[in-house]
Length: 208
Image (cartoon, rainbow, N blue to C red; front, side, top):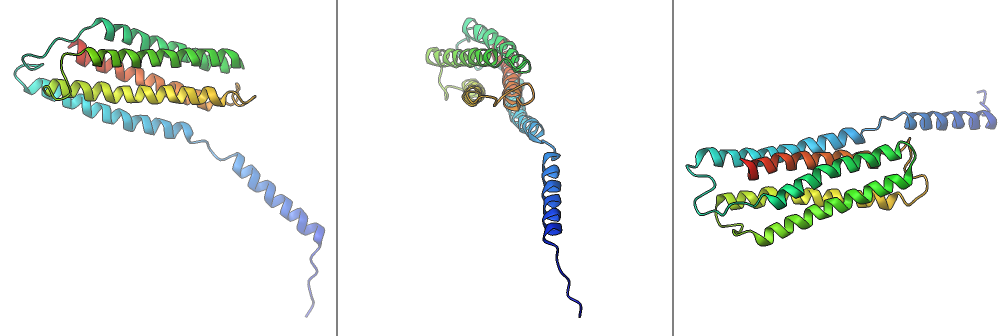
């Protein structure tokens, strides 16, 4: 039986081609991070819609809403908080615009301002909690109020932490650029989501 002799050079060349093909296949692998973020926000939005639906059902079925004896909510602080949070969305967008121009310093500045505005919102919410004349278990309206605003406040907190994480990662030279800035886009999309939810929530609790 004739033996087969393997050419070492040919074997090395075949190995190189296989590795190169695997590398190309890896590079062409689609990026599903944005899709994952959208699915996550849709799921979160459904939770909020369920809470909003429950609140509207309580409002529609009870003869008096809010229940008799419930102190009226003050509009000044929540109104200022609302303007602050809406404005922060525009500030956050400036950060995304800056990095797309490779303006890393501007991106960091706008992100830091956004995080500060989000923190101010949270401080305002805590201040409002400490001055409300009802507690979590006072009545159904009070419970709904704390659940809705508290759940939203949790999301604002997560948004501020996400922005802080992006700022931390931006310390590495070249980590974000006009070609690579998904972290900033993800934080911006999430922040816009938080703002939209608050606008709906503010209308339901304070204006209706």
